[in-house]
Length: 169
Picture 1: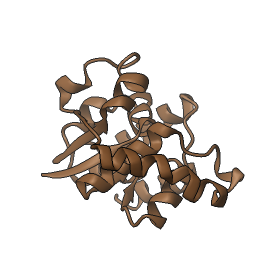
Picture 2: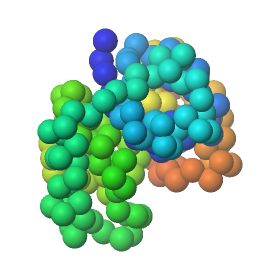
Picture 3: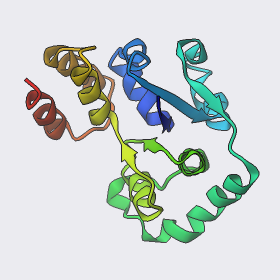
Picture 4: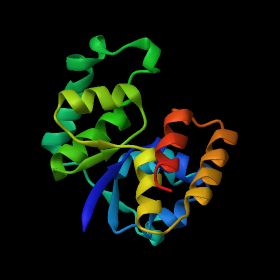
């Protein structure tokens, strides 16, 4: 089963769209760095491990790799893409690199660094499309979830999301 490593914002998007249970029905495994989980996710969304979220350790070599990423890339990142990735964001990237798998993020700057580091990326829109393609949601249900994300003040390219979902009809 395909493993994907998530940052915090993907899980927050899924929660805002009331899709947390549906996410874990996908034929994929989802992991997250242990530090990121315990600091950012568990306090507001406990029990995700029971749904299938893998809380994973980043090895020492990859912690060191994560620590050097800001020095290597932050000066290249554009302010219009939002804040620079946090230490926990870089740990998610490092874990994806460690596990040789896809990083789940909607953070434009983290996506840019992942691209430079040759780590494949998928975001919320890709997950919504996968839910439709795997017949876990209809297009209309996915669009309603997208509305929930919008109401929850999440940041997504709304027109692109609607276009990609409507193309699945």
